[in-house]
Image 1 (cartoon, rainbow, N blue to C red):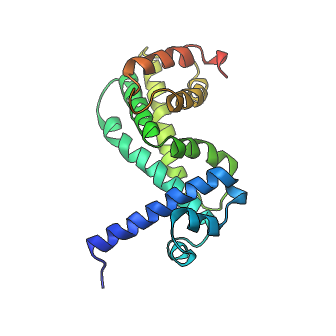
Image 2 (tube, one colour):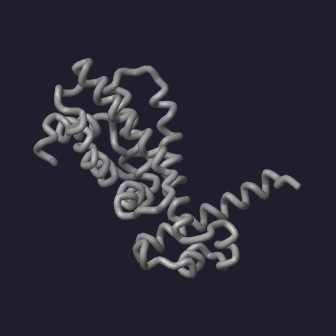
Image 3 (cartoon, one colour):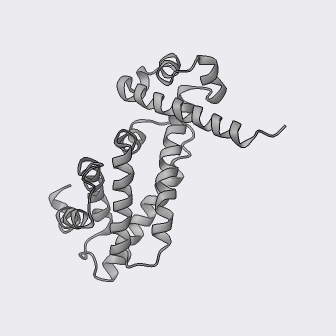
Length: 198
């Protein structure tokens, strides 16, 4: 018997509560120190409910990363699809990433830092991460060709983006969001001569 929309919504809400609780545990205890008991406690469910949705803490971790990266990608798709200049699209992408970061700074920091520290057999979130990085790389290359960015090595520019992303997390907040002007200033500081920041 197929599940109803209401049942589907309830399952999704439970999963989200588990992922939020797990994020807190992973941030507090680290990946090695986290246990399924602590994830269950943090999310307010019993272990049976936790195991109904996830078979292991690695499964929970993977779900946090997939959900986070997929949401970032889906929020950027409409911006990428618009046919603006590379620099304008690049700034719009950074504005949207900044908006995402300000809504859930803990998750955003986790998404960009944790994948470096783990090696799971399956890493399905990487598809979204690679697509995002490929789009940004393409925007930089197109922007350099059109003279919208300085004629520097796109790989070097791309490395400078690490500082740019973390700058977006640390700047602004819900009451004082980041403006296009803020992003343009960051671009000038970090991309005009990225060798100074790397």
